Length: 149
Image 1: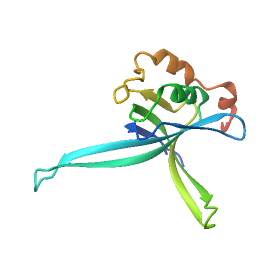
Image 2: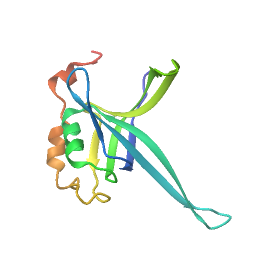
Image 3: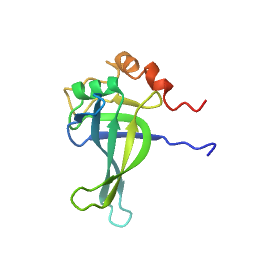
Image 4: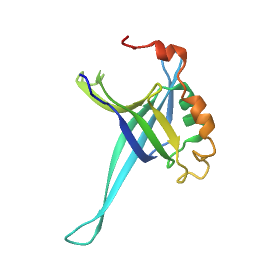
């Protein structure tokens, strides 16, 4: 479909420490649980209301996985750019098909930036911007995959 776009931009806080796992190809992947919240004042009661949405984020970029593993902890505030992806899997206990929608951070059109706050032990995005830029540059192998021309 010409003119389509699959892009997600989120600013939120991690609800848990990142989970780092090794894939069958030997590369590491990071899984994040990201909370985004919106607040408003109820028109009828004047009461402050809040709604939190939880997002599953999967980081495949090796450089960013290393940054996530080293610097991010529960409560850290991050800005992410990625793509929505829904995967199908079978529940081993029930045999039923299940679906999971995740934000994928992979390749040159995705990013993760630490915003600071929340976790005083993390470094700010300003302090490490040069390192992030180096970490997110795709390798030649990544560029050769799935290019339609």
